[in-house]
Length: 97
Image (cartoon, rainbow, N blue to C red; front, side, top):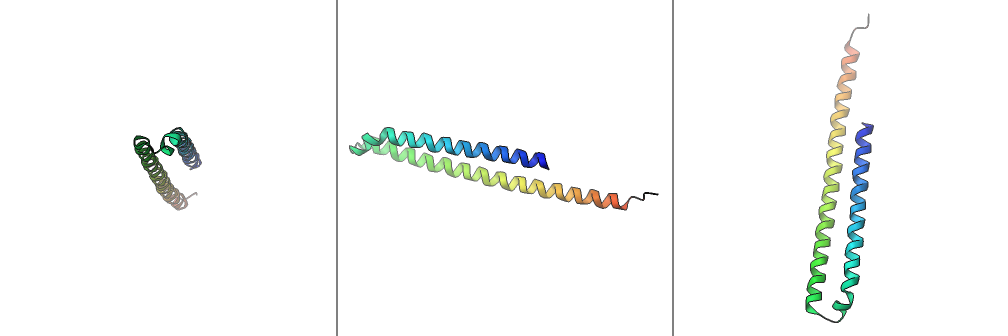
């Protein structure tokens, strides 16, 4: 059970790191395109919008992955708790004389 929690935390931290890297990367892209967009260049505007759409898409995908991860680990914990409870019950039924 402890190993399961450690694995979950590790994956959650990796997802958070990835989210931060994406945020920084898209922020850098926006800064690079800022002058072009400010001048009203239609191609620059199109690229900026596409970048923003991609960022939203990736943020949504990462959020869904994090939710799925949380749900999967919660389900695994329930299964382990149930198995543990059943084993304790069986152990209690064993005669010790």
